[in-house]
Length: 385
Image (cartoon, rainbow, N blue to C red):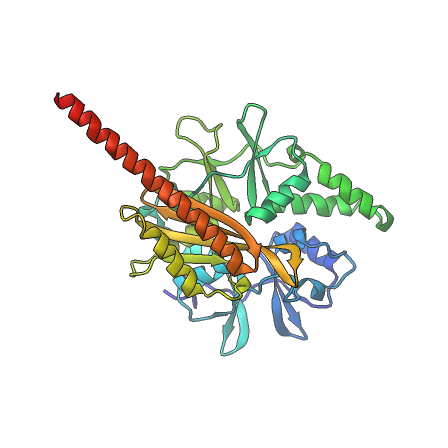
């Protein structure tokens, strides 16, 4: 299947000279997945709600200030006849929810992750939430400030955070859109002179004041088709995952991106590897990243890796012009999920630290498994006495 019948010519477009205040209002009023930016009718880029939220560009600034190559990773350019699986991979690797579609070199329309999911939804009943969800969720307390929520969203490259009360029970969820909506509304009531002090005040507002509650949840045994149907119909980007018998305890999160990632799984000889923010690669290649992960996986023959996700995140700190990069590697295997995280100046250094940590974690799993097998053999021998 290709995207010729999935992509649409209907999208929101702004010129590079448009004020950022107008763009922020567009996200508030229409909740688009992204906005196409043009320069005299020629395609320039895409801006997302997350980029608007994370930027410090003032309302009077022009859109051009936000789409400079140094500010964000460019959305992939998709050919109108591209394969759906490859399109899903490109959206994930560029951390984009919407991308421009070209036909014969001209901007034709856009493709969104939602459109892909709608097109393949009948094929998702073979997957469960447990097959695709992310465990070990990043959690906020009700009295944590919005500033902390923003830092968590940036650091982990996610779009939603579960909120728990003093007993550790799930009471709400805070999303990128919740924060953007709140900040935009509050900024409308301030003057330019108030802006700096008011921004500091906004960051201290507890997430309890803006979180969505009650929370929509799902369970591990729920089919991916059912979960995606709910997300699409209610315009949720994700659902909290809870045990079957207790929807107060959050054990993970399942998002549209998780399901899109599953669509890229193949049965090829090499494992599936997704790289988020692939444009940050400097002295390291995609091929070497894949090979390094395969080498680590091979150290534990009984562990079958179904999918690997590598995410790069750039910090503001630099050393001799090279940015401090965080690298997160997560493997989805038949032995559960295993991860490794590291930081370094440049993508290659960050990846090397993360792959070393991943290898230690893989070998730890191997050691635990070996210990369990040894205990089992010992008990069997004792029972024979």
